Length: 121
Ligand code: AMP
Image (cartoon, rainbow, N blue to C red):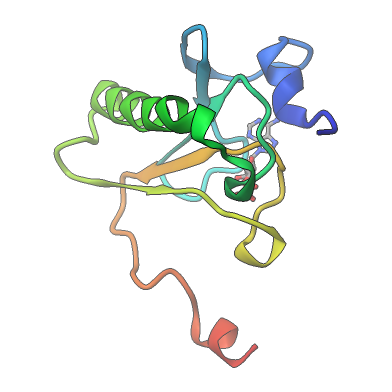
């Protein structure tokens, strides 16, 4: 897999607002937040998309959710509620091909997450 900007964040080659780190994962604020709280949780292992997750990654993927919940608690949004999203592929809006959970909170979040304009497409 070719290197993405997230590998550069893991390797501290570019700056990020890092919220949590352990041996296998990293959480940091999204540079273009879509809600008052918007952070990303990534594995350090570069996996391009959900389609590339294998049996060997089962525990790792579960770990990302535990980190998401922990950082949400630390941010004070766990009780009010938050959304966790992982986009898969270009049509779903994935722009960085290194899997990541988006964690969004701090305002009422609409559902379903698409617009009438998108429905016509
Ligand atoms: P996606 O479109 O689902 O692949 O999400 C990629 C996310 O990465 C977007 O929400 C971007 O704002 C975010 N992003 C891209 N570059 C950076 C960066 N250098 N630091 C933090 N977040 C970033």
